Image 1 (spheres, rainbow, N blue to C red):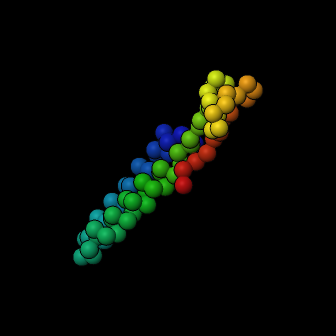
Image 2 (cartoon, rainbow, N blue to C red):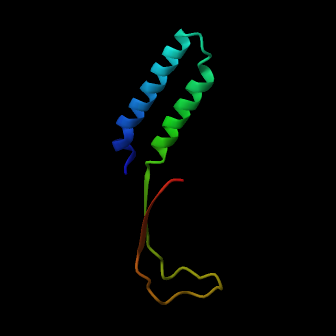
Image 3 (spheres, helix red, strand yellow):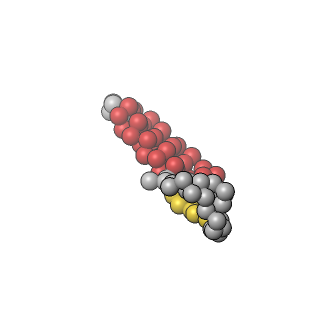
Length: 84
């Protein structure tokens, strides 16, 4: 999915992390390690939603790995995947 469609979830997760830190800090808890982890988790989850799409076209005049030139015209390739 495009990252733009995950923006709302990221905003919500970050807001939740900050509210949790605010409430924990009011009780005297050291919030920095927990806040850092919560923000990191929110950004990581957001980035994993990225969709990567590629389109590849092979130049038939390009030399191959053994020095020859391909005379066969392969079809264009494409792929879709996510980040890990």
